[in-house]
Length: 128
Image 1 (cartoon, rainbow, N blue to C red):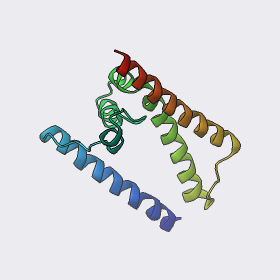
Image 2 (tube, one colour):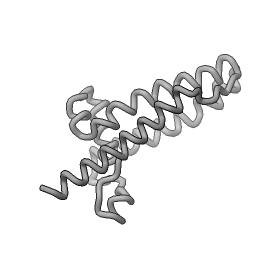
Image 3 (cartoon, one colour):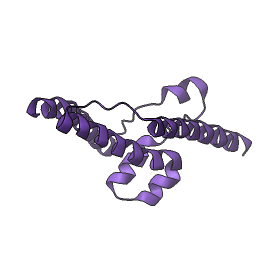
Image 4 (cartoon, helix red, strand yellow):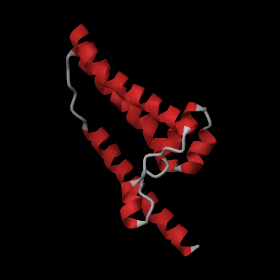
């Protein structure tokens, strides 16, 4: 179990460390990761605003997070809980659980919601 725990926590801590470095860069410089989708197409991608949503989460400002990108604001906690659920089963029970039917349906709904949000947002922005 210790080996599985270490194997699971090592990449999580690496991602958290990179996230902390990115947050520090955002607050101390003008550095931002550019959106390649927007650069190529000139349109907002479904994930536009994810950095601002996460920064709003860190400030516990859920209202700003929701206004930045409502779909991402709802999806991130769901993905986080599902991620923890699967990692728990791997570490404690040595069981790599496959996604069940409900998880697959929810995943497709989330992908569809992101695409629909991006289409509506881009239509609305270009009309005005």
